[in-house]
Length: 79
Image 1 (cartoon, rainbow, N blue to C red):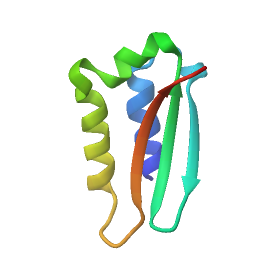
Image 2 (cartoon, rainbow, N blue to C red; image 1 turned 45 degrees about the horizontal axis):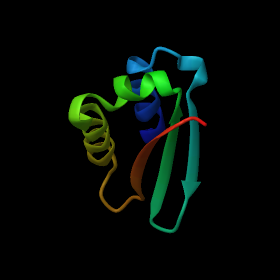
Image 3 (tube, rainbow, N blue to C red; image 1 turned 90 degrees about the horizontal axis):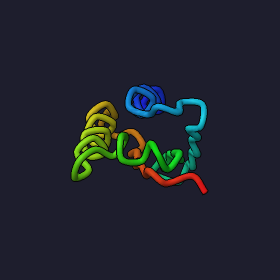
Image 4 (cartoon, rainbow, N blue to C red; image 1 turned 30 degrees about the vertical axis):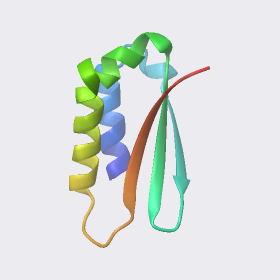
């Protein structure tokens, strides 16, 4: 469910939706989601002073039930 939430928020702000890639790594207590964006979409998805990225992380952490794996979200530029 959390991955769908991440995709929804990212694709709401990204203009080049087909260029967005997601990498999910399962670890012992953490699921790391890395979002790779086109350089032109970086500012739109991160937001001014990182407000959208911070709100995305807050949404994901509040959507995760207690005792479940924790999710981390990284936003990186596609190379």
